[in-house]
Image 1: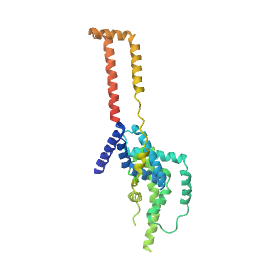
Image 2: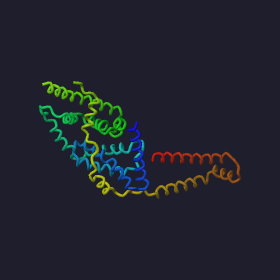
Image 3: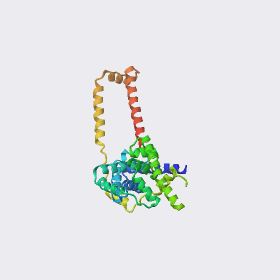
Image 4: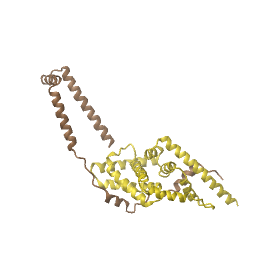
Amino acid sequence: MTCVADSAAEARIDQSLVARALLGDDRRAFEQLVRRHQGMVRAQLCRLLHGDEAAADDLAQETFLLAWRKLDQFRSDARFSTWLHRIAYSCFLQTCRTKSWAARHAQDDAMEHLPAPAHAMDLQLDLARAMQHLSTAEQAVLLHCVQLELSHEEAAYVLEMPLGTVKTHATRGKAKLKTWLSAWHEAAGEERVR
Amino acid sequence: MNPIDDDDVDTLLRQSFDGPTPDAGFSDRVMQQLPPRRLRSAWPLAAGVLVGAVLCALSLFNSPLWRAAWHGLRVGERSTSTMIVLSTMAGMSLLALAWTLAEADDH
């Protein structure tokens, strides 16, 4: 309940800052919006770009410049943070289509598909490896729904996917992770027994 | 050993997420790059309203309905044409009011 109230209060603050930035052409209000949301937007992009912080920062900067230009198109039917995540995700898709990042990432992917080390690794590393083997859509849905803590509806808005598709990707992604991590779990259990 | 369930997967995913990235001068860099906002000039709207009003007046001026309504208004007579013109004006005003309220609500 407190969490919902906090979220509503945060949304009201964002709305008033947007109104100030729009009506009074107040750059300080927009600066506050940047400071409030840059952390999550950069974290989102960093995850989408598989840890490429420099590329994530470039895209985050592009995201905020676009948000500044399109601020009058923001409608309060979505939270400001969700709207920013949507712009960031569009920028990410645009970059994947046009720039060399996707080609570079393809090389990284080839590295990822090398055989896994025989010894049991730390669970977090296994999770990161398992995430890489999910489809792009499943990774994106789990990132937004679980790690960025958006609702399914908000994730559908950000990813421009039908709500049913988001729910399906979330369920399938978790089921795959459970299967892969269960193998690790059992192996870890056997090692403990020995 | 208990099998992994959905909550465990959620917890592991959340634990593997580092959370918001520290600012480290990012916001300042964005603000330095921010272009001046292009103010939407008001003259096209004003010109459109003026041209529309002039065209409307010209087309109504020769209309017998408008003449009859104007005559009715001057002599204080509630004729059909007077009522039609007044109802149209009231309807247009209400539409403009509803549009303004909807726009204000969006912002």
